[in-house]
Image 1 (cartoon, rainbow, N blue to C red):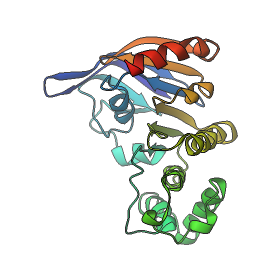
Image 2 (image 1 turned 60 degrees about the vertical axis):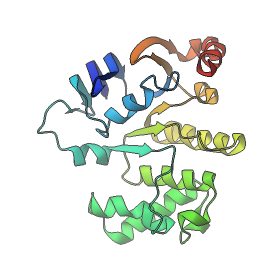
Image 3 (image 1 turned 30 degrees about the vertical axis):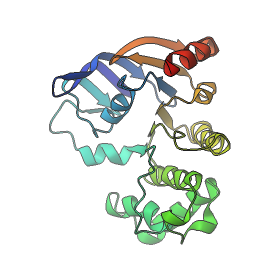
Image 4 (image 1 turned 90 degrees about the vertical axis):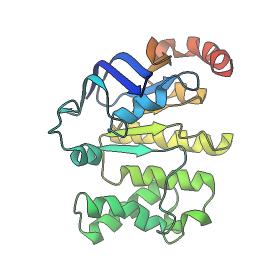
Length: 236
């Protein structure tokens, strides 16, 4: 599904990702943790080429991102992305935000795109907000819309960059519940960078990154052992 092979990334002289080797299988939930500036967000963003890699090989859903011939639009149609800052189009209604990508990228007929969008809004509990604009929504509601928009192309992979970072505890818990259900009910592969240790209860594996390198990997049954360490080190 996703295969990092000796991946490096630089921002000018700053070595942000250093020899990353990881393999993510279909249907897995992987949480990427690490101190601020460790490279965890950059790692997430390379998977859909928001940040192109500098060296190595990265294969996503059978597409080799090291090959310049790879169709990036096709890649992004298969990979949804949820941003910390929501990134909704302020001039578009909730419904239009969700239907934009399917109609433009997948050429989905408008009626079908609306039906899919309404089903997603029902799933995230916001069907009644279809005609509202982002500025009329709370932060939690905007993040729910962002998740619905990311799922509108029916991607097999969902990337989440600090999805609860701007939310209160209760709303963050609701967002995590939505992600959990997407994984369990639809088999969506989820990779999430976060400081929110509650996400560890949902993951199959924890990837700990420091200074652009994978420092350690923990399985689900080992994750509870890591929580105290993560809390201490991210606060340091």
